[in-house]
Length: 90
Image 1 (cartoon, rainbow, N blue to C red):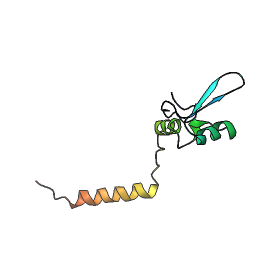
Image 2 (image 1 turned 90 degrees about the horizontal axis):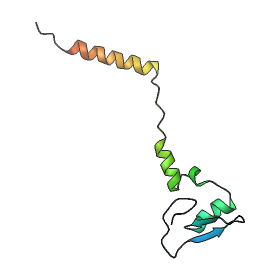
Image 3 (image 1 turned 90 degrees about the vertical axis):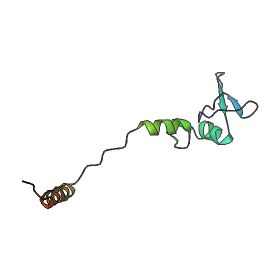
Image 4 (image 1 turned 180 degrees about the horizontal axis):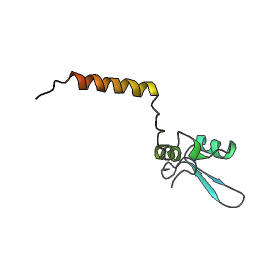
């Protein structure tokens, strides 16, 4: 059985079961998860500390950093110096 909020595995005989008016049941591993979903009406996938949130955050790619013109210019000058420092063989 897994928690309805954080998707952690709940060992047998522990946790809480919350029954909604329409008859569906929600399983919670802790009162923290129950308070977040039932009381505060939060979604588990948006919380960083839940397994659902961790899975979604790892799927997102880190944004690519754009190099500034100054950084490109410095890199080009370093490459030119390195090329000029190498002795030419004839």
